[in-house]
Length: 188
Image (cartoon, rainbow, N blue to C red):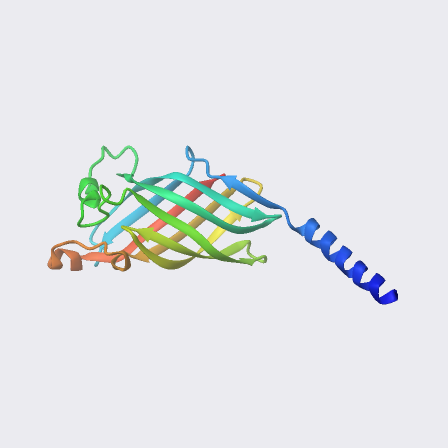
């Protein structure tokens, strides 16, 4: 009898503990405020192009105070130069098959696969699957998440060649840096 009572106490406390700590919530991305800044440059930093691209949808999943996942869909047709720059720059060329081929692949996707939280710096090490031009590759980046302001900010680079983002002219392709820099400002 005492053994049965002990087992019931353990099960009851496990159930209460899991109920206290299990509070999953989904936070929708604010599409009006959120933006993904991009920057591409030439290999020897002669000059650069930068701009913005916007999101179609997105969400961040939390459990209590911890971020547990998320997914984001990027509207590749929205790629543009920096706002108020009179749309000067290579935007139409970036939309062509030489680079992002946005008419064939109008969306890019990022799905968070795992997160490690560093409490002493409030930094999150995020692993995610990034899909561009139908090619999915894993990436790692760091993000600062502010639960009071409901924001997530991240700054990272990718190697464009992993997603087949290459210029059809070998000499010109070599003149372009393989790194594309992104700065995400997300609001929920």
